[in-house]
Amino acid sequence: MTENSYDVLVVGGGAAGLSAALMLGRARRRVAVVDGGAPRNAPASHMHGFLSRDGLPPSELLKIGREELAGYGVDILEDQVTRLDPGFTAHLASGRELTARRVLVATGVHDDLAAIPGLRESWGTDAVTCPYCHGYEVRDQPLGVLGTEPASVEHALLVRQWSPDVVYFGHTAPPSEEDRERLDARGIRVVDGLVTALRRENGRLTGIELGERFVPRVALFVRTRTVPHDDVLRGLGCAVTDEDVVAVDAMGKTSVPGVWAAGNVVDARATVIIAAAQGAAAAGALNHDLVAEDVRRAVDAFGGFSPAAERAAAGTR
Image (cartoon, rainbow, N blue to C red; front, top):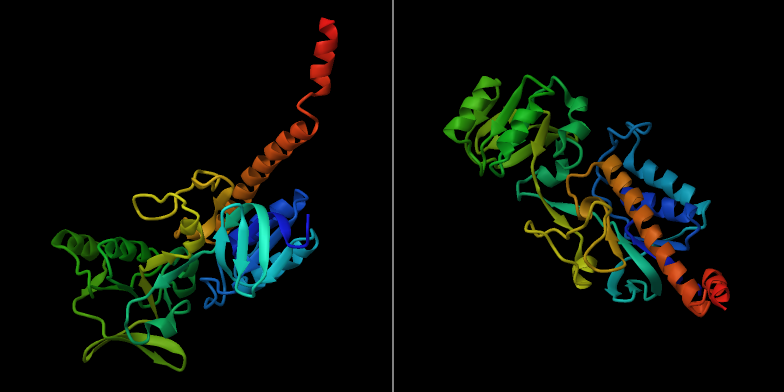
């Protein structure tokens, strides 16, 4: 292989991408990871629910992962894949070109936040989406849930598990009468009207503004619309689901031969540990695919006449 030629190109260096690269490096594959350096959980100071790494800053997990990969000869490039041609040739923002036999895309998503003053400044710290990731840290405190879609009511009922003081802000998704009954039954107060701002003081959320009204809260849970970073996959012609997400099988294989995907780019609900597991699973399947190709190439190079076939032929003479 040449300097810019690899067995596998991993696009994206988050938990899924690094986990896949680790498996492939240990399988003695020549691997490059191209990472643009903008993980979804960058604003979060700690991650949770990752066995043995609970409470670790997300940036520290990536640092440890990169150090581990270096021991297996994996190349990590801080760059951006701007185009990926069938075959596969990757064009990077730096002007460099890489070729690879297989591709694994783990580029994640970003959250499309509502245009509410203070929401973006609070995002990832005291305005969050996942109660399993952040709920324990704000347990038993005044919490809010922002209504942005019908499923926001279910979100509020879930958040209630962490605190008896939960307010559901109807905003653009006021609850139905049936939903109000369920919220009332769980002691969740409903505040109708559009949220106009998140009030912050000394770098922390202090409450929610609805015009002249103010409701003190220390954290706000929000269901967001996630936008996959899947331009590379769509550019290759990967099939999508009815939900307009790139379709993969249980091992991360797309409809395009030689292309796999893992993590939030194909599963927005995957937590860090789940994304890492998906990356590892995809890497294993991908390596088996490479092994099959290596065997085919070896047989072809041998002339299609194996020692077993030679022995069989000798027996007929």
